[in-house]
Length: 291
Image 1 (cartoon, rainbow, N blue to C red):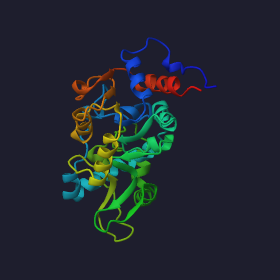
Image 2: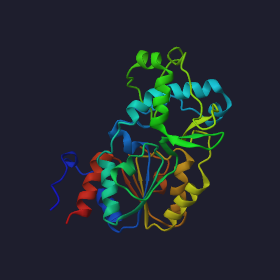
Image 3: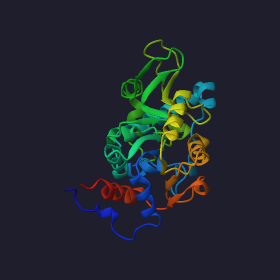
Image 4: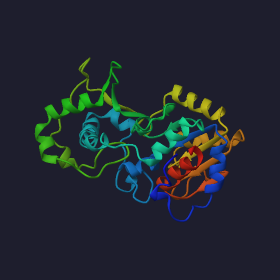
């Protein structure tokens, strides 16, 4: 027998929960997840009540590729943030999605997140639309290497920097930390381990960069084969994720949205639940997978 309800699910049932359960119980669900799903893992979102965009402007692709100073600033901030980011673990929401997939109700997940937590939770069919921070790619020769390897090389090249900054607390959804220009000063970048070029980039899609076509096509194919699309923790502000909601609505595929606060896709939603994912998803998985 499955254990009783999670403590965090106790209390009033959010409006729309019964309709959400009916949609997911029918199976064939494709999940579209955003930064709001990872906040309970200690990674902030962009646009929530405490979203990082209120204090932080993400690095753009144009600035990163067009300026050595921009790359140095990005890697200094990302080097500090990585030490916390890599310690993040799947929360009850990620685990619930994996449980629903294992039960045959979720057919796959398209995530806008770069934290790898869906895979760590046990989800098998995951399209990481914006990539994953645990990889580094050289824009010059195409070499792909592990992020932990680069972290070690950067620590060796910047012993004073590591000792001076220590552990910072202001982490952003893209894995970097808030640092001033004074804190960044003196940081030394390292070159590609294969070709030596100053062209290393986290293997993620920056703001202003195009999502690789194969990921987009696979995501559309998943939506086309779905009975419903379940949006979790995304305001759908950027077209990168919103287009899949538009596509589903155009094809008559039901859309359910669980998010705290309004989203760009609310008018397209057949089911809308405004509540914390950590409350809704464990209860949903418990109700639908109990033996």
